[in-house]
Length: 189
Image (tube, rainbow, N blue to C red; front, side, top):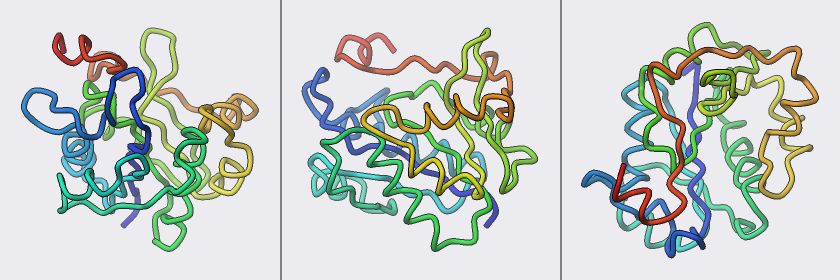
């Protein structure tokens, strides 16, 4: 196992009206879809970080591997910390992070950002000059990311502080990083 995956899926989906992990997108639950993207890209293991309505998410997709985030209400950073802590027990040299509400991120985009990734890697998907997901965090950075992650910022502050080391891989031709924040976004996606 070289590259592991994290699906951040712990939020309550307040604007959406329900946890987005439980939203069906094109007939498939977002949590299943996002885990399948990682699997189809050859990423293993893949851990899904859950919090809000965790029991419902686990029951809806029992075949996935879950990490509980009891602090999910404090924001995405706590999910990232919980996921990285779980991955520390694996032999993974890097982790690719996906958000459950970005169904347009495809396996080809994950393969592109993980190609050649190692323990010292910081890699982001590039979309016409913007940096977004998928994000690869080399193992050497996990402790620093966990220590600096606060609120809903996730790894953002750490990546900014280490901007010179971040490699951006163009994936806009392979993926769409639009997120589903409200029900109308899913119905039109």
